[in-house]
Length: 351
Image 1 (cartoon, rainbow, N blue to C red):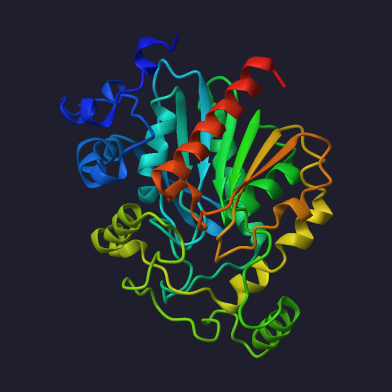
Image 2: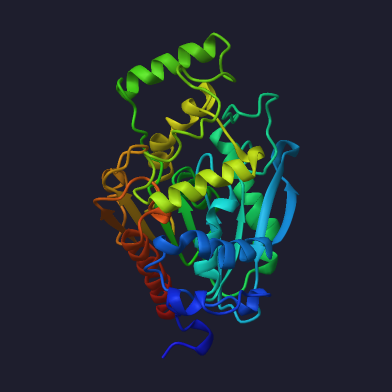
């Protein structure tokens, strides 16, 4: 049997109860039947939970301040490092952080430099720019070493999405960090590039950078546009709408299209992963989720990660769009549920 504090409550049960006043009072919620009551669940549970986090900044490389959140509980058995993707903030992950926290994980997360609530490096704060992919990796290493390690409880696990998954994989390869297990959703290995093939896009990007446009939008790129946001990211209208509301509530987290330099760095991910020999050179168990209807990254992780020595499992959710953690209840419940089981088996078997 599950411990009493880990017994799932149905959505109807929890909505008829009082809202939690402390982190310890947050109930375990069923992963199903949420979408029809999602706004009510956010107001009564996910957002109070989000606000109850420890909120702080750390100074990362190049003196950039990263916005961080942590949820800790004395009865937690493990530690989770939650890493988002491009144009995301920790506010977007309140529901996911809640689900892992209430199932026994202390949760630590942060916003990447140049997005979310973290410091922007350009005067035009809408342009998605980074000097180097390595800068993101260095930031993750700093967050892990300064924030997570001193407070780690039990084994360390990682859930990372899209760009966050790529950064996590390279961080593990470079630093030999050994989380017990990791779950990557829609890892950014190859971008969906239309209408040109990757080698043409790469030539165009390099030409633009040589012309001094490294800190300007890629062709066709604009500031953030709320009206079109999210329709190519998830099939869940309630979650899409909630995420769009976040940009209205917190206008400072808005981010526009990528810059030439960001795109150049993103195009280097596949080469970097192959050079790093990920995942065969890490000791962590790896679970990779691919989205069959992904319109952002190609669901071809199986081609790049097939060299693994048995420590990597790849699962395809055929109908899912890019954001598997923000998908419809049926898809999301499978992703969260199997990830939890994957982590449990790694922790209990010690492998």
